[in-house]
Amino acid sequence: MKCVINVSEKEAIKQGLSQSGDIVIEYDPADLSQEQREEMALSGTRYVNGKEYLLANRMYIGRSFCGEGAVGKADIDSLRFLLDLRILKRAAIAHEEQERVEKVVSDFMNAPFRQLVRQATKNKTSRLQDDFLEKIIPVDEEYRFLLNDIYRKAVDLPFDIRDSFEGLNERIEQIKEESATVMEEVLKLEAQHKEDMERIRKEADAKAKQEKEERDAAEKVAEDERRAWIAEHGSERLKLMADAGYEYRMTYEEERVALEFPGYSLMPEDYDLDDRANPSLEALKELKRLKALDIEAEISWITGYDAREEKYEAIVVDVPWCRKYIIKKTGSEEE
Image 1 (cartoon, rainbow, N blue to C red):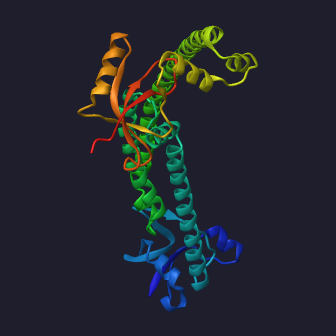
Image 2: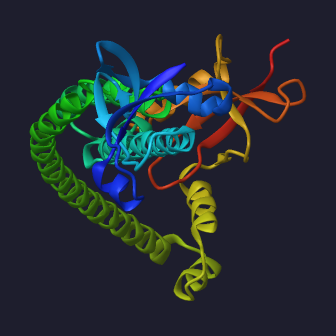
Protein backbone atom coordinates (compact mmCIF):
# COMPACT_ATOMS: atom_id res chain seq x y z
CA MET A 1 0.00 0.00 0.00
CA LYS A 2 1.06 3.59 -0.54
CA CYS A 3 0.65 6.83 1.39
CA VAL A 4 2.04 10.36 1.34
CA ILE A 5 4.40 11.84 3.94
CA ASN A 6 5.00 15.57 3.81
CA VAL A 7 8.71 16.06 4.55
CA SER A 8 9.65 19.35 6.16
CA GLU A 9 12.43 21.17 4.32
CA LYS A 10 13.96 22.37 7.60
CA GLU A 11 13.88 18.87 9.11
CA ALA A 12 15.39 17.41 5.89
CA ILE A 13 18.24 19.93 6.01
CA LYS A 14 18.92 19.01 9.65
CA GLN A 15 19.31 15.38 8.58
CA GLY A 16 21.48 16.29 5.53
CA LEU A 17 18.80 15.27 3.06
CA SER A 18 17.79 17.18 -0.06
CA GLN A 19 14.33 15.75 -0.74
CA SER A 20 11.29 17.51 0.85
CA GLY A 21 7.58 18.10 0.21
CA ASP A 22 4.99 15.41 -0.52
CA ILE A 23 6.70 12.05 -0.97
CA VAL A 24 4.86 8.82 -1.78
CA ILE A 25 6.09 5.72 0.05
CA GLU A 26 5.10 2.11 0.11
CA TYR A 27 4.27 0.45 3.44
CA ASP A 28 2.87 -2.80 4.73
CA PRO A 29 -0.02 -2.33 7.23
CA ALA A 30 1.32 -5.40 9.04
CA ASP A 31 4.31 -3.29 10.05
CA LEU A 32 1.98 -1.02 12.04
CA SER A 33 0.25 -1.69 15.38
CA GLN A 34 -3.53 -2.05 15.53
CA GLU A 35 -3.87 1.41 17.07
CA GLN A 36 -1.61 2.88 14.36
CA ARG A 37 -3.68 1.24 11.62
CA GLU A 38 -6.91 2.65 13.10
CA GLU A 39 -5.33 6.08 13.24
CA MET A 40 -4.08 5.76 9.65
CA ALA A 41 -7.66 5.16 8.53
CA LEU A 42 -8.54 8.61 9.92
CA SER A 43 -5.95 10.40 7.74
CA GLY A 44 -6.69 13.20 5.35
CA THR A 45 -5.82 12.81 1.66
CA ARG A 46 -3.43 14.47 -0.78
CA TYR A 47 -3.24 14.30 -4.57
CA VAL A 48 0.21 13.57 -5.98
CA ASN A 49 0.65 13.32 -9.75
CA GLY A 50 -3.11 13.06 -10.16
CA LYS A 51 -3.56 10.21 -7.71
CA GLU A 52 -5.14 10.45 -4.22
CA TYR A 53 -3.23 9.05 -1.24
CA LEU A 54 -3.71 9.06 2.51
CA LEU A 55 -1.59 11.84 4.04
CA ALA A 56 0.17 10.69 7.22
CA ASN A 57 0.69 14.25 8.46
CA ARG A 58 -3.00 15.15 8.47
CA MET A 59 -5.49 13.74 11.01
CA TYR A 60 -9.25 13.77 10.53
CA ILE A 61 -11.13 15.09 13.59
CA GLY A 62 -14.86 15.44 13.27
CA ARG A 63 -15.50 17.20 10.00
CA SER A 64 -12.19 19.02 9.95
CA PHE A 65 -8.54 18.17 9.46
CA CYS A 66 -5.62 18.94 11.70
CA GLY A 67 -2.03 18.94 10.51
CA GLU A 68 0.34 17.30 12.97
CA GLY A 69 4.05 16.50 12.96
CA ALA A 70 7.11 17.43 10.95
CA VAL A 71 9.60 14.83 9.76
CA GLY A 72 12.88 15.04 7.76
CA LYS A 73 12.50 11.92 5.63
CA ALA A 74 9.82 9.63 4.25
CA ASP A 75 10.07 6.04 5.54
CA ILE A 76 8.26 3.54 7.77
CA ASP A 77 9.83 4.97 10.94
CA SER A 78 8.57 8.46 10.08
CA LEU A 79 5.12 7.00 9.38
CA ARG A 80 5.05 5.29 12.78
CA PHE A 81 6.24 8.51 14.45
CA LEU A 82 3.52 10.61 12.80
CA LEU A 83 0.80 8.11 13.68
CA ASP A 84 1.91 7.85 17.33
CA LEU A 85 1.99 11.64 17.55
CA ARG A 86 -1.55 11.83 16.20
CA ILE A 87 -2.78 9.21 18.70
CA LEU A 88 -1.38 11.24 21.57
CA LYS A 89 -2.84 14.46 20.18
CA ARG A 90 -6.29 12.92 19.77
CA ALA A 91 -6.23 11.58 23.33
CA ALA A 92 -5.18 15.00 24.64
CA ILE A 93 -8.02 16.70 22.77
CA ALA A 94 -10.52 14.15 24.12
CA HIS A 95 -9.29 14.65 27.68
CA GLU A 96 -9.39 18.45 27.38
CA GLU A 97 -12.92 18.44 25.95
CA GLN A 98 -14.17 16.03 28.60
CA GLU A 99 -12.70 18.06 31.46
CA ARG A 100 -14.15 21.28 30.07
CA VAL A 101 -17.64 19.87 29.65
CA GLU A 102 -17.59 18.14 33.05
CA LYS A 103 -16.64 21.47 34.64
CA VAL A 104 -19.63 23.12 32.98
CA VAL A 105 -21.86 20.31 34.25
CA SER A 106 -20.39 20.61 37.75
CA ASP A 107 -20.83 24.40 37.79
CA PHE A 108 -24.52 24.07 36.96
CA MET A 109 -25.19 21.15 39.30
CA ASN A 110 -23.63 23.09 42.19
CA ALA A 111 -25.22 26.44 41.36
CA PRO A 112 -27.00 28.19 44.27
CA PHE A 113 -30.44 27.74 42.73
CA ARG A 114 -29.86 23.96 42.56
CA GLN A 115 -29.06 23.90 46.28
CA LEU A 116 -32.31 25.75 46.97
CA VAL A 117 -34.23 23.26 44.85
CA ARG A 118 -32.65 20.31 46.67
CA GLN A 119 -33.56 21.90 50.00
CA ALA A 120 -37.14 22.57 48.93
CA THR A 121 -37.76 19.12 47.47
CA LYS A 122 -36.02 17.25 50.30
CA ASN A 123 -37.76 19.08 53.15
CA LYS A 124 -41.48 18.53 52.63
CA THR A 125 -42.27 20.97 55.46
CA SER A 126 -40.17 23.73 53.92
CA ARG A 127 -41.95 27.08 53.92
CA LEU A 128 -40.49 28.20 50.59
CA GLN A 129 -43.12 30.26 48.85
CA ASP A 130 -45.29 28.61 46.20
CA ASP A 131 -44.33 31.14 43.55
CA PHE A 132 -40.66 30.31 44.09
CA LEU A 133 -41.27 26.58 43.68
CA GLU A 134 -43.50 27.08 40.65
CA LYS A 135 -40.79 29.09 38.88
CA ILE A 136 -37.64 27.27 39.89
CA ILE A 137 -38.68 23.60 39.68
CA PRO A 138 -39.39 23.65 35.90
CA VAL A 139 -36.11 25.48 35.29
CA ASP A 140 -34.26 22.90 37.35
CA GLU A 141 -35.86 20.05 35.42
CA GLU A 142 -34.93 21.65 32.08
CA TYR A 143 -31.31 22.15 33.10
CA ARG A 144 -31.01 18.65 34.51
CA PHE A 145 -32.25 17.25 31.19
CA LEU A 146 -29.76 19.35 29.22
CA LEU A 147 -26.87 18.66 31.55
CA ASN A 148 -27.52 14.93 31.60
CA ASP A 149 -27.32 15.00 27.80
CA ILE A 150 -24.07 16.98 27.93
CA TYR A 151 -22.62 14.70 30.57
CA ARG A 152 -23.58 11.62 28.59
CA LYS A 153 -21.73 12.97 25.58
CA ALA A 154 -18.79 13.91 27.76
CA VAL A 155 -18.32 10.50 29.35
CA ASP A 156 -19.36 8.31 26.39
CA LEU A 157 -17.10 9.91 23.83
CA PRO A 158 -16.71 8.17 20.48
CA PHE A 159 -13.17 8.12 19.17
CA ASP A 160 -13.98 11.01 16.87
CA ILE A 161 -14.57 13.55 19.62
CA ARG A 162 -14.94 16.74 17.62
CA ASP A 163 -17.72 15.25 15.54
CA SER A 164 -19.52 14.25 18.76
CA PHE A 165 -19.21 17.79 20.12
CA GLU A 166 -20.20 19.62 16.97
CA GLY A 167 -22.64 22.33 17.98
CA LEU A 168 -22.38 21.40 21.65
CA ASN A 169 -20.00 24.24 22.52
CA GLU A 170 -22.51 26.71 21.17
CA ARG A 171 -25.29 25.15 23.30
CA ILE A 172 -23.13 25.30 26.42
CA GLU A 173 -22.57 29.01 25.92
CA GLN A 174 -26.30 29.48 25.38
CA ILE A 175 -27.02 27.65 28.63
CA LYS A 176 -24.58 29.95 30.42
CA GLU A 177 -26.44 33.00 29.12
CA GLU A 178 -29.79 31.50 30.08
CA SER A 179 -28.43 30.62 33.50
CA ALA A 180 -27.42 34.21 34.13
CA THR A 181 -31.00 35.31 33.48
CA VAL A 182 -32.41 32.52 35.62
CA MET A 183 -29.99 33.20 38.45
CA GLU A 184 -30.99 36.85 38.49
CA GLU A 185 -34.60 35.81 38.99
CA VAL A 186 -33.58 33.17 41.54
CA LEU A 187 -31.61 35.69 43.58
CA LYS A 188 -34.65 37.99 43.66
CA LEU A 189 -36.84 35.09 44.78
CA GLU A 190 -34.27 34.05 47.35
CA ALA A 191 -34.11 37.59 48.74
CA GLN A 192 -37.91 37.68 48.92
CA HIS A 193 -37.91 34.27 50.58
CA LYS A 194 -35.47 35.49 53.23
CA GLU A 195 -37.66 38.53 53.89
CA ASP A 196 -40.71 36.29 54.17
CA MET A 197 -38.92 33.89 56.51
CA GLU A 198 -37.72 36.78 58.69
CA ARG A 199 -41.26 38.18 58.85
CA ILE A 200 -42.69 34.74 59.67
CA ARG A 201 -40.03 34.21 62.34
CA LYS A 202 -40.78 37.57 63.97
CA GLU A 203 -44.52 36.89 63.87
CA ALA A 204 -43.97 33.42 65.37
CA ASP A 205 -41.72 34.84 68.10
CA ALA A 206 -44.25 37.53 68.93
CA LYS A 207 -47.08 34.98 69.04
CA ALA A 208 -45.04 32.63 71.23
CA LYS A 209 -44.19 35.48 73.56
CA GLN A 210 -47.84 36.55 73.80
CA GLU A 211 -49.00 32.97 74.43
CA LYS A 212 -46.36 32.54 77.16
CA GLU A 213 -47.42 35.79 78.81
CA GLU A 214 -51.04 34.65 78.69
CA ARG A 215 -50.12 31.24 80.17
CA ASP A 216 -48.03 32.88 82.89
CA ALA A 217 -50.87 35.28 83.72
CA ALA A 218 -53.41 32.44 83.82
CA GLU A 219 -51.11 30.35 86.00
CA LYS A 220 -50.65 33.28 88.39
CA VAL A 221 -54.41 33.71 88.68
CA ALA A 222 -54.80 29.97 89.32
CA GLU A 223 -51.95 29.97 91.86
CA ASP A 224 -53.46 32.97 93.67
CA GLU A 225 -56.81 31.17 93.79
CA ARG A 226 -55.19 28.00 95.20
CA ARG A 227 -53.29 29.97 97.83
CA ALA A 228 -56.45 31.84 98.86
CA TRP A 229 -58.43 28.60 99.16
CA ILE A 230 -55.62 26.94 101.16
CA ALA A 231 -55.39 29.92 103.51
CA GLU A 232 -59.12 29.73 104.22
CA HIS A 233 -59.94 26.00 103.97
CA GLY A 234 -56.71 24.01 103.83
CA SER A 235 -55.53 21.61 106.49
CA GLU A 236 -52.47 22.41 108.60
CA ARG A 237 -50.49 19.86 106.58
CA LEU A 238 -51.49 21.46 103.25
CA LYS A 239 -50.65 24.96 104.49
CA LEU A 240 -47.20 23.93 105.72
CA MET A 241 -46.57 22.00 102.52
CA ALA A 242 -47.38 25.02 100.33
CA ASP A 243 -45.42 27.46 102.51
CA ALA A 244 -42.33 25.21 102.45
CA GLY A 245 -42.34 25.10 98.63
CA TYR A 246 -43.24 21.46 98.19
CA GLU A 247 -45.47 20.22 95.38
CA TYR A 248 -48.94 20.27 96.89
CA ARG A 249 -51.41 20.12 94.00
CA MET A 250 -52.62 16.56 94.58
CA THR A 251 -53.28 17.18 98.30
CA TYR A 252 -54.98 20.48 97.46
CA GLU A 253 -57.28 18.82 94.91
CA GLU A 254 -58.17 15.94 97.24
CA GLU A 255 -59.04 18.30 100.12
CA ARG A 256 -61.06 20.65 97.92
CA VAL A 257 -63.00 17.77 96.35
CA ALA A 258 -63.78 16.39 99.83
CA LEU A 259 -65.04 19.82 100.95
CA GLU A 260 -66.94 21.00 97.87
CA PHE A 261 -68.07 17.63 96.45
CA PRO A 262 -68.78 15.28 99.38
CA GLY A 263 -68.91 11.65 98.28
CA TYR A 264 -66.81 12.37 95.17
CA SER A 265 -63.19 11.40 94.46
CA LEU A 266 -60.51 11.91 91.81
CA MET A 267 -60.80 9.57 88.83
CA PRO A 268 -58.13 6.81 89.08
CA GLU A 269 -55.16 6.81 86.69
CA ASP A 270 -55.55 4.88 83.42
CA TYR A 271 -59.33 4.64 83.72
CA ASP A 272 -61.50 5.64 80.77
CA LEU A 273 -64.91 7.18 80.21
CA ASP A 274 -67.50 5.42 78.04
CA ASP A 275 -70.91 6.61 76.95
CA ARG A 276 -73.70 5.51 79.28
CA ALA A 277 -77.16 4.67 77.94
CA ASN A 278 -80.21 4.21 80.16
CA PRO A 279 -78.67 5.66 83.36
CA SER A 280 -79.97 4.75 86.80
CA LEU A 281 -82.45 6.83 88.78
CA GLU A 282 -79.80 7.64 91.39
CA ALA A 283 -77.49 9.08 88.71
CA LEU A 284 -80.27 11.09 87.09
CA LYS A 285 -81.25 12.69 90.43
CA GLU A 286 -77.62 13.61 91.22
CA LEU A 287 -77.21 15.10 87.73
CA LYS A 288 -80.34 17.21 88.22
CA ARG A 289 -79.02 18.47 91.58
CA LEU A 290 -75.67 19.53 90.11
CA LYS A 291 -77.21 21.35 87.16
CA ALA A 292 -79.40 23.29 89.58
CA LEU A 293 -76.09 24.54 91.08
CA ASP A 294 -74.77 25.48 87.57
CA ILE A 295 -72.23 22.67 87.73
CA GLU A 296 -71.57 20.93 84.41
CA ALA A 297 -71.69 17.15 84.75
CA GLU A 298 -72.54 13.99 82.85
CA ILE A 299 -73.31 10.33 83.48
CA SER A 300 -70.72 7.87 82.13
CA TRP A 301 -69.38 4.38 82.44
CA ILE A 302 -66.03 4.25 84.23
CA THR A 303 -63.89 1.37 82.96
CA GLY A 304 -60.64 0.07 84.43
CA TYR A 305 -57.73 -1.70 82.73
CA ASP A 306 -60.05 -4.46 81.66
CA ALA A 307 -63.71 -3.52 81.30
CA ARG A 308 -64.66 -7.12 82.08
CA GLU A 309 -63.08 -6.81 85.53
CA GLU A 310 -64.32 -3.34 86.55
CA LYS A 311 -67.00 -1.14 85.09
CA TYR A 312 -69.42 1.08 86.94
CA GLU A 313 -71.74 3.99 86.43
CA ALA A 314 -70.63 7.39 87.77
CA ILE A 315 -71.33 11.10 87.74
CA VAL A 316 -68.39 12.90 86.11
CA VAL A 317 -67.57 16.53 86.90
CA ASP A 318 -64.83 18.61 85.23
CA VAL A 319 -63.76 21.75 87.09
CA PRO A 320 -60.92 24.16 86.09
CA TRP A 321 -59.06 23.94 89.41
CA CYS A 322 -58.59 20.15 89.21
CA ARG A 323 -56.34 18.32 86.79
CA LYS A 324 -58.44 15.14 86.87
CA TYR A 325 -62.11 14.35 86.49
CA ILE A 326 -64.10 14.25 89.72
CA ILE A 327 -66.37 11.21 89.90
CA LYS A 328 -69.06 9.71 92.13
CA LYS A 329 -70.02 6.05 91.79
CA THR A 330 -73.79 5.71 91.41
CA GLY A 331 -74.30 2.14 90.20
CA SER A 332 -72.72 -1.11 89.00
CA GLU A 333 -72.77 -2.55 85.52
CA GLU A 334 -76.22 -3.64 84.48
CA GLU A 335 -76.73 -7.32 83.80
